[in-house]
Amino acid sequence: MDSSRETWSALEECGRHKKAYLIVILLAVVLALVVAGSIPKEYAAEVKVSDERQETDLLLGLNNMAAWAKSALGDEQEGVRLPEVYNRLITTRAFAESMSHVRIEGYGTDYHHYLLDHHRRPWWGPLTDLFRTPESDSDKVMDIIQDNIRSKVSTKYNTIQLQVVDQDPVVAAMLADSVRVKLQHLLEKYLRQRTLRDVVISRQKTAVAKERFDRVRNDYITFADSHQDITSVKVQQMEDHLMKEYENAFKSYNAALEQQRRAEAIAGRTPTTFVTLSNATVPLKPSAPATTGYVLSFLLIGLTVTTWVVLGRRKYQIYKQASWRS
Image 1 (cartoon, rainbow, N blue to C red):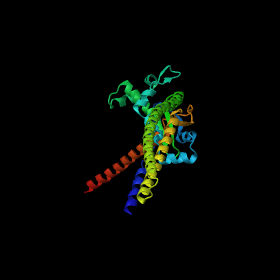
Image 2: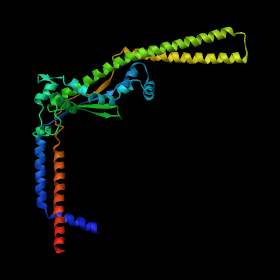
Image 3: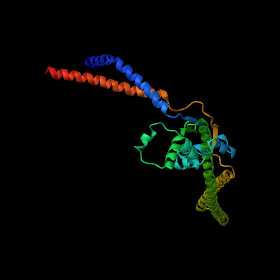
Image 4: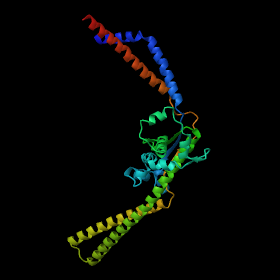
């Protein structure tokens, strides 16, 4: 009961200051609009890509069930083909440095100098630099590039959404396509090196399996030829044992040959990384700043502070009156 009375009393006290709340609301909206208007508009261009591992297996001759089973059991190249790996690659400093050399059509310069000469900041930008660790122009550009290149992974659909943000919508679309191309070239180079390494390893495993198979086969043939007229239980058990070793060695040799053929088939193809589901288009509407979000944030802060002040003053008055009476 006391809690409900205190709540009602607080609401009544706030209701007595309607004028103050209206002024705060007006100031919050104006300040939010000023801040949002001071931030340069940004446009986001997006490209969506998907993993192409299963399609590659199908082209190599595996049926749908075999391709699914191989994927479920694990693939040696799984670590590089997962969209999460693409995400980690494009957020590295090295990738940002490679993007800094991309030529920006219409500006006659590369991405690095484009940001140095044409990237606009809000009016309070120089003030925030006073509280940061001093950086060179190159480091500042790299920071901007890393902030502008973003990605979002969908593990459900095994896709990744590549996004580039820029103050020029045409540049944003062009850079989004450049990110896709550079990522594809980087992965193709890595996969080409990896497939050649896999061929060498598979051939080494095949050679070892063939050597074991030849040795076991010779042991079995030699034993069978030298014990044709002997029918003892011990001899029969030894022959059965050698026969099983022969069959196991034969299976291992065939499996190694199959792995070698697959590795050679992959190495003979153009490395496949991902398929493009949707290309970049020039964005028509800015993605930032979010004016509504600024207005709501300023309103929340202003109304909260006003309420604290109103209720704090009321409590101080009650305390002062109680002290005066005593």
